[in-house]
Length: 129
Image 1: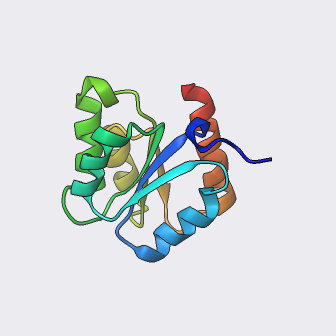
Image 2 (image 1 turned 30 degrees about the vertical axis):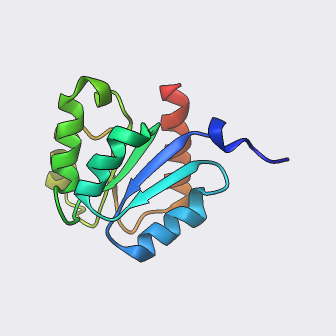
Image 3 (image 1 turned 180 degrees about the horizontal axis):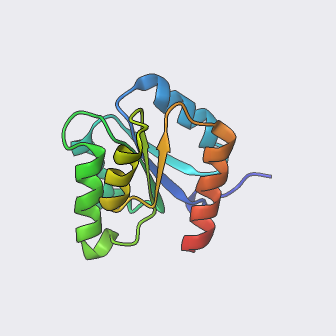
């Protein structure tokens, strides 16, 4: 049975590493409509047009970084409640606190457990519907 792509939740994924983007495609393409971008500016542009149900956002990438984007999205009424998962190689408690203070729904450190990320995305989407 094929799922109608127009009814699947839409994920916007911003990560500057092609290998990471390929992992996200493998992980999510069967269940979600995906849009992937490789820098902060493209992320902001696609957010306006794509209206995703959830954003997976790398912290360290060209253009505005994930922390800056997260803070901007929380300040805008149209994206204030968008679930945002910040993903980062920065794994200290202060890094995590900085991400959550910027408004991230969750902060996930790399390398992450693929199964745990799948579960987190499912939970966040279920909670936002």
